[in-house]
Image (cartoon, rainbow, N blue to C red; front, side):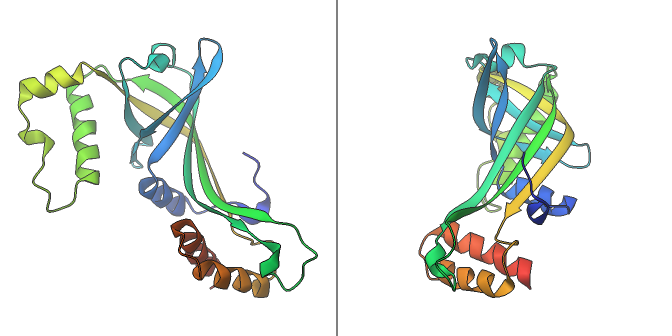
Length: 202
């Protein structure tokens, strides 16, 4: 990923936190000699350095992906930045965004227990704390039947790149003008970018 020095996210914990909060990703590999992507939730185990997930078995991406160096993109908030918000019109529009690229080698999980544990961890992450649903309480035979329709995997993380393009290359006064405009918006992306920009200049 092209990352000018202004926009590099260097703090590993910031990157991990971003992945955990924006865990619906795009997983890219080569399939049948062409680029191929699947959109899916991934679970981070930062202690082990793995991402866990599963394909639908009918999605043939899994058939030739094992051992490939794959790319996973985690996309965060993004928004248009108008030059009309600056103190001068002698400028051009831009786009602010946050993205994390993860590279790693994918391994298909054959062990049923490991697959179930990764599914249970994913359900636990997304269900509300007071939810009445627990995967462990679902009939074992039903789970086994449904599990035949998926292919579990883990990705050994080799490299992570983080980019936060938040007008850091502009003067603080201009950044504050942009933040004010974004905070007046009803769009959640605008509001989230404003929040991130404020943290950057505090």
